[in-house]
Structures are given as C-alpha cells and as structure tokens.
Length: 198
Image 1 (tube, helix red, strand yellow):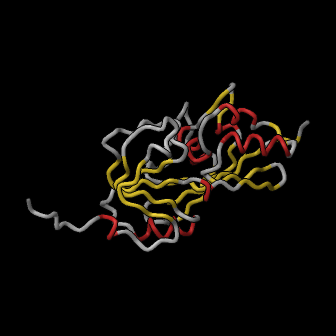
Image 2 (tube, rainbow, N blue to C red; image 1 turned 60 degrees about the horizontal axis):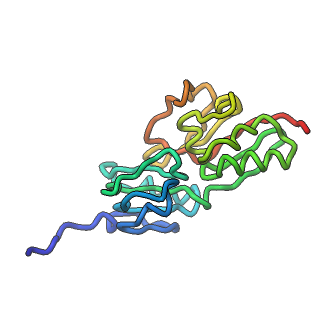
Image 3 (tube, rainbow, N blue to C red; image 1 turned 45 degrees about the vertical axis):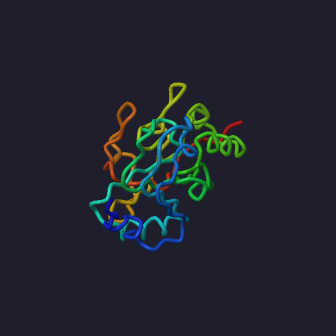
C-alpha cells in the first residue's frame, strides 16, 4: 500500500491563537450529540483571531460555522473543510442603555435572562429558542409571536476575507426564518433593543 503523500489541510491553516484540531469529533458540540468529525475544527479565541484566520485561509477550502448546533444534524461521515465553532469565547453580553450587545456565541436564553436581570423587556422570547445569537440572526429565529427582527438594531459580521461589516436592520432583508445576508458571512455580535420595564 502506498503512503498518502498529499499535504494535510491542517498544515495549510494560518497561525492562530485559538484551538485548531484535525479530525475532531463534533458529537460533543452538536445539540443532538451525534455526527462525525470535522476535517479541521477551529475555535477562535476572539474576533481578531477569527479575522486573521479568515484572511489567511485559502478561498477554495470549505468553511462551515457552528454555534450550538440546535438546528443542525451532522452526518456520520463528518464535515469536509473547516468547521468554525463560536462557543464560550464569543459569549459576552453587555448593556448600553436599553440596548444589549451580545456576541454571536451567546446563548439566546442567556441573553434573555441577562435582560431580565437588567429589567429590560421585549427579549423574553429568546428564552424559548435553543440556540445562539449568531444562529438567531442567520435565520431570524423567533418564538411566542416575536422574532429577532423585532429587536435587532444592527449586527457585525466578518466576510470570507476577514473584513468586518456593520449591518443595519434594513440590510438583513428579513423574512420568515431567513435573511438575505451573504451565506458565507460570519456574524460576530448583535445590538438588540429592549424597553425598561418591571
């Protein structure tokens, strides 16, 4: 049997500060705890780390973004290319008056509860969505008669070249469970607006 002499994809990855692994299991990441491996799994340490990675990765390599994976079934055969997992390193939640600024990896329920603790109403519906803010932005997630488009002020996303974009509500072109933002853009944060209430 001949040895495989092709260069491994992991050797073509840019230098990063976050975690990067080859043939990494995804069953511990996905909501349903099923599925195969990621050819390459990258967990960026922060937005700058993700930006550097996107600037340096070859455009021909497939990239899949995974948050909580609550709306995803991963095949046993795994995911080719790179899976970028925005987890705990992208879960900050802060406040600016009646606005909550949530990073894309923040759990929807965590944002809802943080707003409750600040007496900020209007985001209670997030408590019923098993996912992250990044996923909620991508699919205009909703529950209990409200959706992310009802509270979004703006969001930030990185394009495939690592450039950051600030998107207004209007630029999302929201419809039922969808937006028109470029499929390969990666959301990194959102500014959501609530109202002070008991």
